[in-house]
Every structure is written in C-alpha cells, then in structure tokens.
Image 1 (cartoon, rainbow, N blue to C red):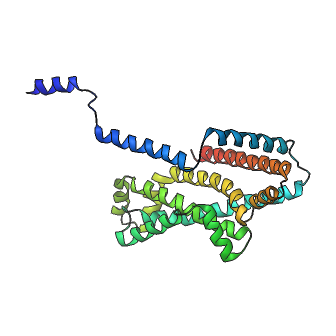
Image 2: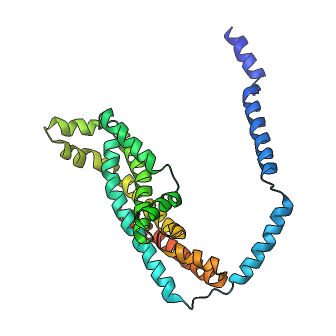
Image 3: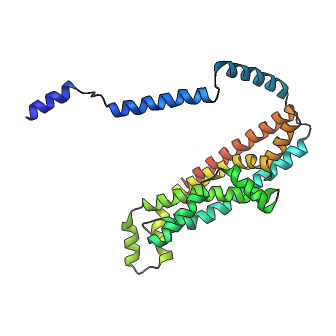
Amino acid sequence: MAGINSSQNRENPFKQNWFVTAIWLLVICYVVYSFNAMGLNWERFNEGLGHASNLLGRMVPPNFSRWSLLMSGLIESLEIAVISSICGIFISLFLGLFAARNMMPNWISTPVRTLIALCRTFHPVIIAILFVKSVGFGALAGILTLVVASVGFIAKLFAEAIEEISLKQVEAIRATGAGFTSIILFSVMPQVFSRFIGFSTYQLDSNLRNSTMVGIVGAGGLGGTLFSAFQRFDYDFVAAILIIIIALIMFGEFLSNIVRSIFR
C-alpha cells in the first residue's frame, strides 16, 4: 500500500487546487474591475506624465533665496522629531512591558494592548488634524501626533520582543529573591536591549519623515511651508524645500547608523 501511495504522489506532484485557483481568479477580476471603476487607463497616465514634465520644468532651478524660512522650518521639524521620539520611546518602554503577556496578567496586558492598537489605528495625518483642532496650530500638535505614532509602533514591537525572551534567566533572577524591578533590569532588558535600540532608531528616522508631513495640516515643521509654496504655485521654492527634506532624511539615516554601531 505504501508503494501504491508513493507512486500516486509521484504521478501528481502538482495536483490542481481549484479553491486557490478560484481565489486568484477573483483577485484578478477585482483588480480589473477596480481599474475600470477608477478610470485608470494609459491615456490618462500619459497625460499625467506631460503635466509632471511641466511641473519638473518649473521646479528647476531650485530657489534658495528664502533660506531663513527654510532653516526655521527645518529646525522646527527636527525639534518635533527629536522631542516626540524621546517621549514616545520612554512611554513605549513601559507600555511594551505591561503589554507582554508572559510578564503581566491578562487583566493588565489586554487593556494595554488595546491602547497600543488604538495608537496605530489611524494615519498620522488624521491624528494631526485631531490635535490641531484640539490644541491649535503649531509644533505642539505635531509632537503629540508623533508621540502617538511612536507608541503605536515601538510599544507593540517591544512587547513582542519581551514575549520571545528566555524565561530561564527570569526564573534564575527570581530564585535569588530579587524584586520585580531587578528582574526587569537584569533578566529582561539585557535580552531585548539591542532590539529596542533598533526599534527606537527606526522610529526616529520615521518621525523625521513624518515631521515634515504633519505640517501640511498645520502641525508645524516644513510641511506647512511646503503646502503654502504649492498653493502659491511657487514651484522653484518647492524644489528647494524638497531638497532640504531629503537632506533631513539622509541626516536621520546617518544618525541611525551611528547609534546602531555604538550599541552593536
């Protein structure tokens, strides 16, 4: 019997799975329907390329004459990113610990996990609009927005990292009669510290990008300057702002590499 089954398996190595095929056909049909429903076609795409060519032509050469306005927006974006990253990382350190199911009972971890999930439910622009309506225009709305975004990302990953640790070290420290704080400092943190640094540097890099985006809705930073330039059709100044944003992101990448090399 074993020989018959093995020969049958060799005869049909790629047996057709009709359920999977049906799923793929549905996906393809839905994609085709979506293209038609939204009016996406080659003619529209080609027309868009023509408009993009005109836009790029008006952006060259970049206009850096208003460098003081550029620098003030750049400094504000940098301040928003750094402050929100520090606050978000600090809060996430505790929330991630309370959300770890191997360290906390369900009546603690479940509400904290729900809070973390709520923090990453909405896009930062939507959260920025809410905070602008709440605390007004300016950097404070941007900082609060990116703190919420940081908590939603870092706290979740930090909790998952804690849940993957070896509990043998925790039991060894606990067997000495150490308290909860000592257990966290000497058994949990050494196992997740390098990953936490990686999460934090990535979030700093993300906040540098988002700090220029939330300004579009009035939450401070270069985004507001960029939006105003678009409204004035001042495209050469737009190009200058985009170059400054690229330089800011490159600086964040350089800073992240330095931090990783220090704690590697």
